[in-house]
Amino acid sequence: MKIRTKLTLRYLFVSTILVIVLFIILEETLFPQDGYDMLRILNIQLLLLWIFSFAVLFLIGYFMAKSALKPVSQIVRQVESITASNLSKRVEVDANNDEIGELATTFNHTLNRLEKSFDSQKMFVSHISHELRTPLAALIAELELSLRKERDVEDYKAVIENALNDARKIEHLSMGLLNLAKASYNVNQITISPIRIDEILMEAYAVITKANPAYKIDLFIDNENDDDTLMTIQGNEYLLLTAFVNLIENGCKFSENKTSRIEVIVTDEDIVVSFSDNGIGIPAEEIPSLFDPFYRGSNKTYTSGNGIGLALVDKIMTMHNGEIKVESEVGKGSCFTVALKHL
Image (tube, rainbow, N blue to C red):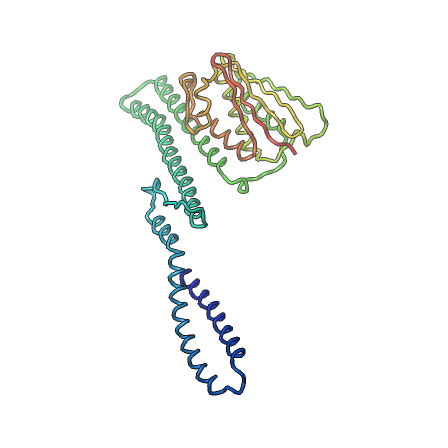
């Protein structure tokens, strides 16, 4: 049953009860018990009047409900006309600040989020296709060239080494995309437990120095308090480790001395971790775009990458209700500061 019909019936029911009560009051008030004949004639008249009133009330209720719900019907038709191909279309909002206007505004806000999500998805797929196409094309070309004629052992070794490098790029990209997807999960969908920040940083130190022995990491922890809770947060160990590894690697990659300095300061509410370097720095106009997926600034020619790392770090910090800030000066280095709430 439509809302319009329900409203009409409710209006009619209430109105009918009121009319019946009024008739009963009039009957008992105006006519004594001995006026039977006159009362019978009056009852017939009242019955006819009640039937007429019933019909009038029904029509009034129906058209009132129809008029009240007309904007809702218009919104329904407009929403039904919006598809994936025209997500930019919006529901018309009247100037009246009533519940119908609020409903239309809410629909538009939802459509804004959907359009943004679809655009991000399209951009994401486009970037993935581009990033994967380059190493895959190089890998295929290397292997095809090696099959065109007989080669000596050294040539085959060179081909295998090049193919292995391209495969590693694909693996690195795939892991970055997987971690980016994990960081987009709802916080209720991942394992959250008490984690010591200093232990995660030490693990990140071990991971990076094992993979890149030439990298140098200086770690300083300022915590004179013996309370372990001040160094502990609620979080996901794997994702936080991934974030710290990315920040440390960035500092080392973009520094000529391959060095990253990590400093941990504990305040009354937060654990503040800064990752600084003396590298090439980041132009001020590029800083607002640093955390966009696949964004690579003017320093992209300095070292290889795919623009996933910082976007991943930003998502992980958001998931942990943390903050990340950037300060950088071209030619002098950069400092990424992370603040996380401790227990």
